[in-house]
Amino acid sequence: MSDTANGGTLCRDDANANEATRPESIPTFRPRADIVETDAAYHVTLDVPGAGEGDVDVTLDGDVLTVEARASEPTFEGRVLRRRRYRVGPYRRSFRLGEGLSRESIDAALAHGVLDVTVPKAPERQPQRISVRTV
Amino acid sequence: MLMRTRPWNPLAELESFGREIERAFGATERTGGSASRWNVYDGDDAVTLTAELPGFDPEKFEVELTGDRLTVAGGREVARDAAAREVLRERGDASFREAFTLGFAPEADAVDAEYRHGVLAVTVAKPAAEQPQKITVRV
Image 1: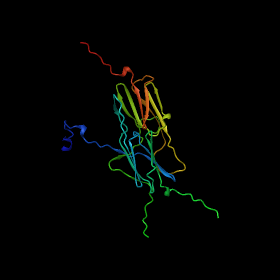
Image 2: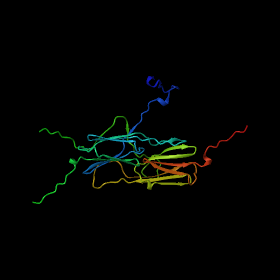
Image 3: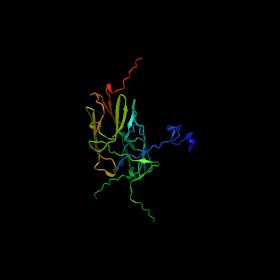
Image 4: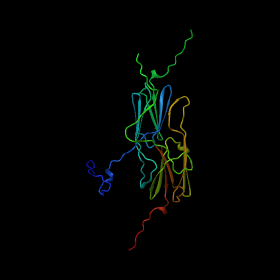
C-alpha cells in the first residue's frame, strides 16, 4: 500500500517508513462547563487547563457561544515524558444559550486554567421593574 | 395563527466534528480524595510530575517530601451563586492527595512546584550521586 501524499509507503513493516510524517489524529477535548443564568446574563465557566492568555477564542454567533482554546504540552529541558496519564490537546465546545444576547459587552476572563465567560442579555430581555402607582 | 412549538431545551450543545474525548479525573494511585492524573518527565538531573488541576487554590497545595516519598495534595471549591439559576453543572469541588515513590532520596531543598495555567508541575532534583558520572577510560 502506498500513499503518495506522504511520498512513501505506509506499510507497517517497511523499514523506510517515516514515522514523523504519518498523519496523527489529535483529539479535540470538550471542556467541562457550568452555566448559570441570572436576570442580566449567562455565566459560562469552563475548565481549560493548559490554556493561557492568547490561547482562547470566544465567539458569539446569534444565540450560539463557541469557545476554542489551545493547550500546550509542557516541555522540560533534559527530561523526556516517561509516563502519560492524560493527553493534551485543543478544546472546543459550543452552547446555545438563548435568544436576545448582547454581543457588545461579552466578558471573558481566564485564570488558573478556568475560563469565565459572561454573556449579557439584551436590555429588552431583562425583566423590567415597573413601579406601581397608587391612584 | 400558526404557532410553531419548540421543545423546551434552553440549552443545546453543538458538537464539533472530529473525535472528541471528555477529560475527567481518572484513577491512579491515590491516598485520599478524588483521583488526579499525573504525567511524569524523567531526566538525568531531575524528575517532573504534572497534573491538570484547573481552578485549584494555589494556597491550598501541599507538597511534602519524606525520604524518597513525595506527597502532593490540593483542593478546589467551585463558587456557587445562590441567586442564579443553574442551567448546567459539570464541574465540581475536588480534592486529592497522591503519594509517589521516587526511587531516590533527594536533598531537602530539591523540590520545586509551579502552578501555571491550571497545571501543577512538581520538579524534584536528583542528588549528584544519581546523575550519570563520566568515567575516563585510562589507556
